[in-house]
Amino acid sequence: MADTKEIRIPQGIIRYREAGSGPTIVFVHGFLVDGRLWDGVVDALSDRFRCIAPDWPMGAQQVAMAPDADLTPPGVATIIEGFLEALDLTDVTLVGNDSGGAMCQVLIARRPARVGRLVLTNCDTHENFPPGIFKALPPLAKLPGGVTMLALPFRFPAVTRTAFRPFAKTKPPAGLVESWARPGIADKAIRRDLGKVTRGMDKRHTLAAAASLRGSEFPLLLAWAPGDRFFPISYAERLAAEVGGAKLVRIPDSATFVPFDQPDRLATAIADFAPSS
Picture: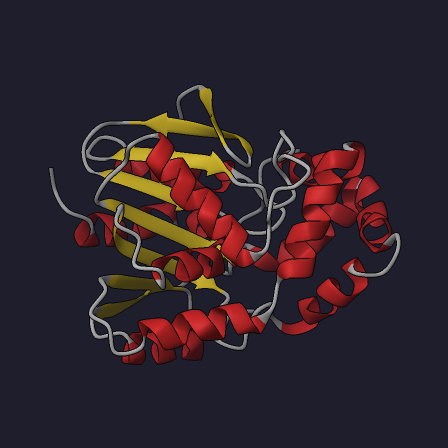
């Protein structure tokens, strides 16, 4: 990836990495990770596409948002839309993973003028937001001191590595997951942002987005790893059946972090779906 750049939008500064030229692809990571999740995919696509991988305000970014920034799913969708506008990006292929995929669905439900198509890898959809045991996080984050309590165990690298292990079959590079956890531990303002994002997770947002997209012909690719314990492929099949322009591609040998486990397979699926230059 190229060096990190940054741009200011009304909600604060967004840092991003950019590589390549051609039709634009913008990547949206999920909760407690950053744009480096997509490095392998970008490496495989940047010879044909302009690839932009921002660090979205999802609790692992290096720069905190403005204190009054809305970081609910509609608020993050607005931030994504504002970022596209600030860079004057058009006919964008938007690619989302994990809770970032939920934010993408909320954005696409608005029929944004700058997004031409959407790729979703394993992510929250319908009533599965947040998934499984993570449904406990929003109520905990609403308690006084709840976010600090949730962040405390991540002071220990071994705990952090264990916490991320179910999401990838490939062992992350040394220090990567620790660097994702560090901002929320060390920076009070980032921890404030983390709390906002966590408290805002609610199935009503993804259910409303799915209802809005139902029956549409919006170009949608679901590049999904079967067997994911958090995001079963049945949700991808359901969404594919509801959206007339949808295509489902199965990407085996991966967990939730498809861009990390299978970057080349995912890149191929995206390249086949996105417009050629």
